[in-house]
Amino acid sequence: MNYDLIVVGSGPGGYVAAIRASQLGLKTAIVERESLGGICLNWGCIPTKALIKSAQVFNYIKHAEDYGITIKDAKHDFKKVISRSRDVANGMSKGISFLMKKNKIDVVMGTGKLVRGKKVEVTAADGKTQTLEAKHIILATGGRARALPNLPIDGKKIIGYREAMTLPKQPKSMVVVGAGAIGVEFAYVYSAMGTEVTIVEFMDQGLVPREDKDISKELTRAFKKEGITVRAGTSVEKVDTKGKGCIVTLKDKKSGKTEELTCDVVLSAVGVTPNTENIGLETLGIKTDRGTVVVDEFYRTNVDGIYAIGDILKTQALAHVASAEGITCVEKIVGHHPEPIDYNNIPGCTYCIPEIASVGYTEAGAKEAGYDIKVGKFPFSASGKASAAGAKTGFVKLIFDAKYGELLGGHMIGMNVTEMIAEVVTARQLETTGHEIIKTVHPHPTMSEAVMEAAAAAYDEVIHL
Image (cartoon, rainbow, N blue to C red):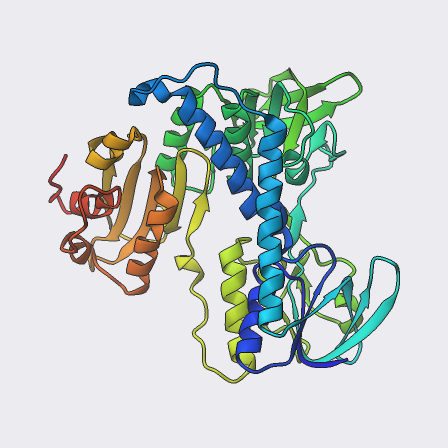
């Protein structure tokens, strides 16, 4: 079976690349071993947001009195919450199937592996194999939960994100290891539904350690207010699962002291590792670096006609990054002249409550890069819309180059900030200055006014502080 392009993997990198290729006239096939949509639609981005929404609704109900509404005996059904999440994921996967048919893309179910001669050998679940051939092959095999040697995932007492989305029974207590996006999102979900949650993070900054320090501090305050215990600068030495629950041994980095915590289940949320094993990289001599595929700015490997995108690269392991890489890669293949992706202008979003969104330099990062900076910060406690919504937690923080007014970075925490960050990303893409943001009239009352006010604060022109 001959094609112009074969895409191995149907996550947000793979299926988007396949659709763009079809739009540009390439005869395209996509190979998927499990479910269309990959991890993002089936076990990541989409179903986790469904869980978070259920947790948020339950939290609203618990605080209904704050809005002048009385609700008695509110409770949640954990199994129905999980079921709704799976229904949402299944619906999205069916949507990808529709898009494949609409764009006349052949879907080949099975595990794909590169073989010599620009071919992909596909092994179906029943063991039968077939070989596909193409002028171009894009590897988009994604990633999986990273496992630590002292934290082996058994799927029952030590779980990864997949098991966290399908637990048959809600645990009374949970230790979350890792305070990145995955860790804090699940910590919020389970805590909001009544589980006693402790988050353990090795980095001294604590929660979301890659974010600006002010964001980390604000989220820590919010989580502690909700009853979540945060242990920063702490390592997990071992987990004893021999008894009914788990005994987790922690070690404080500074003091060296150890202590034990007991819980029903431990969630390992220590990052993602690329799926680069057993896909034929060695057979073709494709270069790798510490488990990731080496590519150029248009995602070409060292082997002609073979490309790689998404979580198997060193770039940010984010769905929208994989999609952008897929489009750029395909457009280059057909002879267009796309601009290389600016990885310093990629937004990152974390969907716990309060939400977090950021792009560009942190304050510390801008200083380390040698910039003389201006920083503006506007708290949602001063926002009329936030007060009306009962969501005064958080702020918008903008960082500018003092010399030229360039917008270096934006950092937000609060209600709906994951929807607001696109304004800052667009502003940076268009090389907007601080004064241009100040003079851009924002609607009132909105949460987005905080962007304008934060810019004004950087130049001592803020009105509502």
